Amino acid sequence: MDQTETLTPLDPAFKQLQRARGAITALIVLAIAILFEVLAPLPLGLFLVPALGLGAWLVLVLPTRRYQRWGYSFGDDRLRVVRGFLFHADTVVPLGRIQHIDVHQGPLMRNWGLAELTVHTAGNHGASVSLPGLRLADAEAMREAIRAHIRQGQR
Image (cartoon, rainbow, N blue to C red):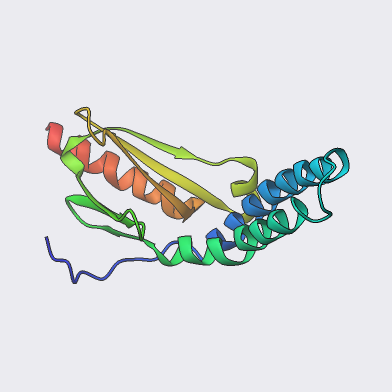
């Protein structure tokens, strides 16, 4: 495997999607922190300040880091997905081993025109590999290319 291979980054809208997800999580954490602030007879800000810090990190820092640490390469015979920093994963899926392909699009993804491609392979360990943050058209094109490769291999 060529480790110097140029990886394709995810769509930049993936950062916005991650910011929206982070904001939803931050609002929930903030609501719980406010509840504890009101109910607990402790110094003011004991729960609120850390919740605000966590919320800022979830919305401002984490989305960019996640975006920068994802990449993929789609070749004639394989899909390579690289992700993570502390827990780095470099997964190569031979197209001939793929048994099932999903293109998923939730409500937030739909808002930004994004989709997640998931391929399921034979075997137990790492039997599915997901690639989020693709334009819907790109995910569908990859799905069709994989299907064509599988059909060609069955002949």
